[in-house]
Image 1 (cartoon, rainbow, N blue to C red):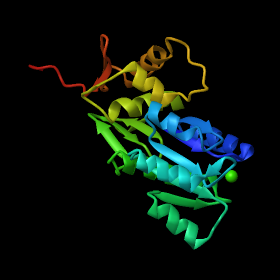
Image 2 (cartoon, helix red, strand yellow; image 1 turned 135 degrees about the vertical axis):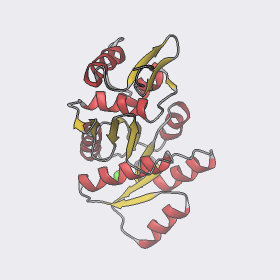
Image 3 (cartoon, rainbow, N blue to C red; image 1 turned 90 degrees about the horizontal axis):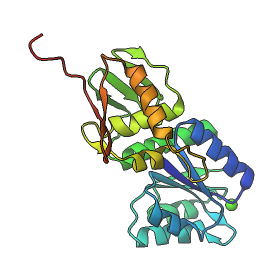
Image 4 (cartoon, helix red, strand yellow; image 1 turned 90 degrees about the vertical axis):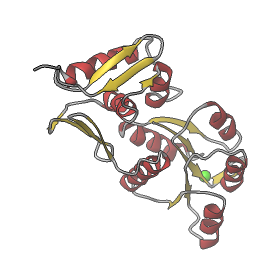
Length: 227
Ligand code: CA
C-alpha cells in the first residue's frame, strides 16, 4: 500500500520514509504544498501524512483542497503546534487523525496501519485465504498456523493479493503498492517476488494464478475431487 508523506523537515521526512518502508509500505515524499494535489491525481494513495507548517503554504489549506477535489484518502495531520484550535480546524476540514511532534515512531506506524485499514473498509487486521492468514498489524503470514519467513516486499505483494483474493490484481497495481516513485525496479521484479511467494506457499497453500494480460490472482487450494 502506498503512502504520501508531506513534510519539509528533511531529517524527519527521511526517518518517516525509512521506517514506513521497513514496515512494508510503498512511500513517496513531497516537501512542499504545491506538489500534493498533482500526486493525488496520479497515484492511488492509501494515506497522506500531512505536516501543517510547509514552506509554500499551510497544510490546512492543502487539506481543504484535497477534500474540495473530492479525494477521500485518509489524512493524518502532523504538527508541532499543539493548540486545540488547530486540532479542531484540521478535523473540521476532514483530517482523520492528528499527531503532535515529537512523536514515537512506533505510535505513528500503529496509527498509520489503523487508518489505512479503516480507509479500505477492512478494520480487522487479519485477512485469510484458505489456510493462509496475514496479520497486517503484526506483519506476519501463517500457513496452517506456521509462520512463513517472508521478506517485506513479499509480504506487501501477499497483502495486495490476499485482500483481493479471487480477483485479478494487475502487475501495475502491485508495482504501485509495493514500490515508491523514487525506487529502482527491475522489469521482472514482480515475477521474482511472486515466484518466491509461490515457493513459500508450497503445494498445500493457496495458489497464485498467472492471468495472461491481467496480472495475478490468489485462490484457496481446493482439495481434488474424488479423493
Ligand atoms: Ca514543517
